Amino acid sequence: MSEFHFEKGKMVPVPSHSIIPERDLGKPPVLECNHLGIDFGGLRAVDDFNFTIGKTEIAGLIGPNGAGKTTVFNLLTKVYAPTRGTILLNGMDTSGKTTAQINKMGIARTFQNIRLFSNLSVEDNVKIGLHNAYKYSALEGVLRLPSYWKKEKAAHERAIELLSIFKMEYMADWQAGNLPYGAQRRLEIVRALATNPCLLLLDEPAAGMNPAETAELMENIVKIRDMFQIAVLLIEHDMKLVMGICEGICVLNFGQVIAKGTAEDIRQNPTVIEAYLGKRGADPC
Amino acid sequence: MVFLSFINNLINGVSLGSVYAIIALGYTMVYGIAKMLNFAHGDIIMVGAYVCFFMVSSFGLNPVFGILSAILVCTVLGILIEQLAYKPLRQANSLAVLITAIGVSYFLQNAAQLMWTSNPRIFPAIFGNGGLQLAGGQLMVPYKTLVTIGVCVIIMVGLILFTGKTRTGKAMRACSEDKEAAQLMGINVNRTISITFAIGSALAAVAGVLLCASYPKLIPTTGSMPGIKAFTAAVFGGIGSIPGAFLGGILLGVIEIFSSAYLSTELANAIVFLVLIVVLLVKPTGLLGKRTSEKV
Image (tube, rainbow over all chains, first blue to last red; front, side, top):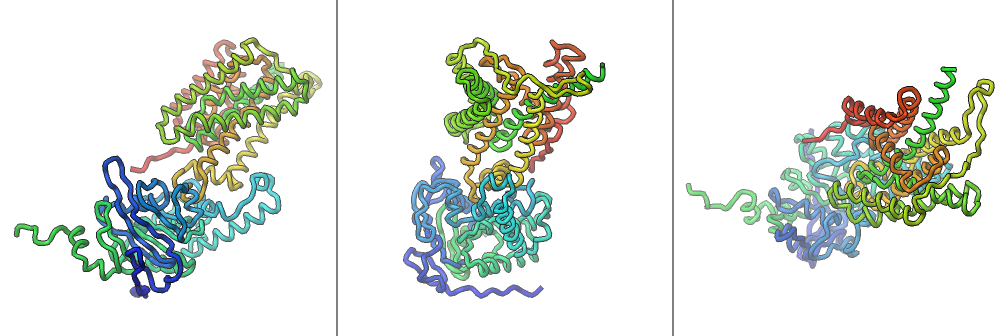
């Protein structure tokens, strides 16, 4: 397998102390978090989180275990209501919105531990993602009116089209819970894409994958970004993946942003190295 | 003659079972989607029967209007109960919700007693007293029995189509599997749960009318025993499963009628519940229930 090569965009600073790809300048950033924070009782799980993601950027959120990465995802999708700060999605304030509304506004996500509708077929999983795209009334559905068939056919075609991105169309009738692990991860991404997002959140997409599968995943993430012209924010522990495709990276530790920048910036940042490996010179030898 | 009485009992059993099945379908849908046992379900049946009774007997309306108004009142009542009593407890533990449901059940019974007294009312014969003559007039199948069985089959097929083939139905199945993931797919979970309650309560209204068409004594506790038996039927068939509720309901009705016809009228209920215990010992998830394995 040839080494996957990916040309990252040139990163330029924006007023919110973040960087976005140069190609996305002039368009409102897909996501802008300002002083975002949440407390769980006395614990500041996330504090003063500022991050901006460009319209077509692939961004990464990294940090040691328990740093608050998934909490950020839960804040972005309004599973948790933030204690402080604002989230702007394409320049629009998301405060007071429910999770379902956030999805309609354009954020879709996958889960760290796969959460497919495992008793439903692969195609139905994708069709649930298409829930808001192809609407028909219950009456049309139960009575099988011609308009139902038309919309159902369109939804079916769209579902197969989305599945074919990962060459999974032949699995359409399989029960989602019976798919192999890698296919379940891919189906989660397809299901999220079906909701027509402008920002795709991937929570540890490479977890449990071997190096070959991870390489394929990297290609696929880039492919999805290019096909749909959307932004991707991913949480990942696989540094090869993060350094390989993430253009802007944000490092969290104990709920605080300790570094932001390109892969090169992060790799050389002493605070990041300390957070991951411990303080230099502290060992007694 | 023995054969004819067997057939007669079987038809009566299927008819009673159809009523149980319709109630059980409501139980099982609400359980499947909201993951709660709505013990007030049986009392919604009673409200539905009263509404139909007053429309037909007091206001002299056509039974069709009686049934439609029962469905309307119960649907609204079901949504109201869900919004006022259960929705605030969405994040509470399941025991709190269960106790609330029992509270709602007693509330409905006592409110009915206050409003309509506990004097029994005799439900009008809305489907007439005639019947289909079979076997040269030796066997008569009342029209109400035919209507009951027919309505039950239509409802079950309709529900299977609805949950399997419609957008809302698919949203319901998604909510039943994982509410949070469903929300992140843009599905309004609260609305989906409300729709489920509306459908369940509308079914309860239909069941109330059908029940009282066959067993016309109507009192404020009319719904409680059929409610518990239908719950039993839902568990028996595999709670959460629509065909399971149907099968469980029919079997329970047949077992009940056969027990009272051939064994003992007094022990009929005891035998019904004994069968439940045996089934659950042998197959804890019910007849059509899926075995769920917890991932560790």
